[in-house]
Image 1 (cartoon, one colour):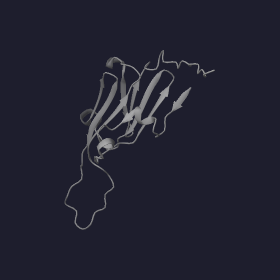
Image 2 (tube, one colour):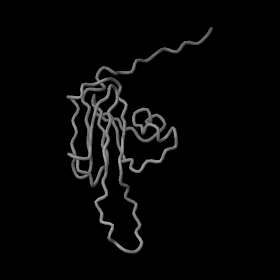
Image 3 (cartoon, helix red, strand yellow):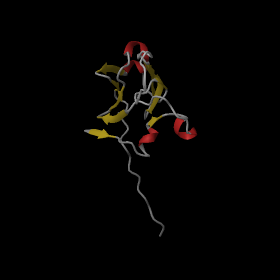
Image 4 (cartoon, one colour):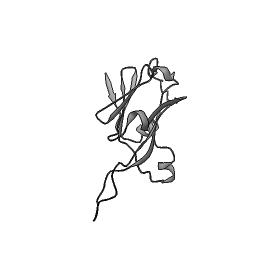
Length: 139
């Protein structure tokens, strides 16, 4: 069973850009991300075309946070003349995914293929079955 989280007020507890939303800070690069539950695993997929994964991406686990940071470098030459319209953003980025519990960083895997970074945190949802609480009413 796969549960897909879409961008909603509830999803913001998992996927955050610290300081940017709270303070209204504009960031240069915010890669699009899909974060979802696949069985007991958490999978995060980020669109990062034009990035050298060996040199420009860092994936870390900090307590209950999965931190993905890096930089998309501008490889264009500035020798062109005339007007230029560019919608491609370059610069540093940082995405944080809050995990339901702490994990050992040794079990986290990351792969990069065709401009997409896929990070898998296995077993992070193990034993996190919701418990239903009975609601009582006053007599």
